[in-house]
Amino acid sequence: MMHPESTGITHELLSLLGEDNVLLSSADMSVYGYDGSLHSGQPDVVVLPRSTEEVRAIVSLASREAIPIVPRGSGTNLSGGSIPSRGGIVIHFSKMNRILEIDLANQMAVVEAGVLNLDLQNALSPYGYFYAPDPASQKVSTLGGNVAENAGGPHCLKYGVTTNHVLGAEIVLPDGQVLWVGGKAADPPGYDLIGILVGSEGTLGIVTKIIVRILKKPETIQTFLAIFNSLEDAGNTVSAIIGAGIIPATLEMMDRTVIQAVEESIHAGYPLDAEAVLIIEIDGFRDGMARLAGGIAEICKEHHVREVKRATSETERERLWAGRRGALGALARLRPNYLLEDGTVPRTRLPEILKKIVEIGQKHRLQIGIFCHAGDGNLHPTILFDARDNEERSRVLHAGEEILRVCVAAGGTISGEHGIGIEKLDAMSLLFSAGELESMRHVKQTFDPRGLFNPGKLIPETGQAPGSANS
Image 1 (cartoon, one colour):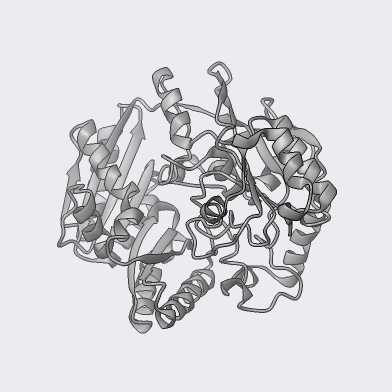
Image 2 (cartoon, rainbow, N blue to C red):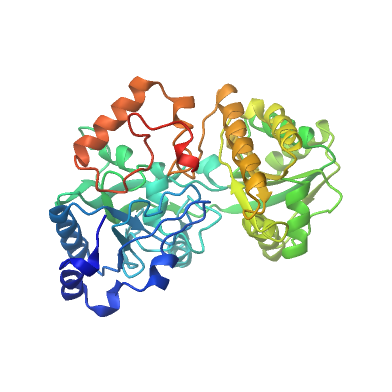
């Protein structure tokens, strides 16, 4: 814990960064003390570096004084990963937001960690390129944060998650050393350090620059809305489409609760009386597209689809996607708070698990809206509640834990893209043995022997009491 009022640390930071880039007010500490999870903390100081050299200097100072550091993008994290739970310095990357290079010949781009996902997409679009990982928060989430959480998104069914598109990164280690891992050259030898860093939630190193893979836009895109009277039929359709050897670019699902909230908020054109809808998008060459579309429509009919609508213009397509991307925000119209889970199951188990989630909601007397990246089995059951009601909050936490247990029991995992952070520390023992967790602690110890980078996240500490992550 740092106490800037009684040390010279604040003065050093002000000398290093200037008054505009060091935040100390109680209001600022409150703003940077929470993210999209149910947790909160209180930093001692927030700094806004403008370069890797300034990050290095901040980290060196923190290392000298043994002060915890939490790197932060836009604070959209949904598992408490950007919460300063032990005080210290929050490094906010909003001023390191430059796209440094677009290398079309090598199909790569080099960006600073604070670049927004959508800003990169917009910069690439005029060249006919795109960056595949597209989390629903892409308007505001940073690429550094996407790397930290190994973010996914609708198009990751076909194209893969963040780790499949990061080729190299400049990182600052806990002792202030700056180095590059990976790079533009393909298939580097040695340990896959990029693979270790992507998804490490800022616990091993602070990413300052990133080399990402960019892709040529597909020749054509077709988007469909499939409407179902049964959640189970929608789930079975997902498995059948993939089982038939058709890999859509996206295959998204929303249930009745989400549909109704979206329509009240965004008016995306979803039918209010449907139990579930699928957004199915296929892309690629024009040749063969009609055959794929016909195959999908036939499979939907075999599983009792009520109607399959095709977007006939870019405006219609964008409206359908506006509904899906705005689903979480729309649910805020129903209750003041939510707990958004992020379990992943084998897609063949999807109908069964959807049914169990509905039963969990009924058991705990809770309203749960379900939307998911159905094609890869990544579920987002969203439990709606009022955090001011302690008894209801307790039921929510128990229901969330039960959902994760169901996912693991089905051969799945506890996070597809939101990370572990604080919220799922207890659940790590559902998925990993004591030996596996100890191996992860050895990795952490190697990179960060004093535990200064984003402490208390991702890996439960030895001897941590069960349930302490939910306190």
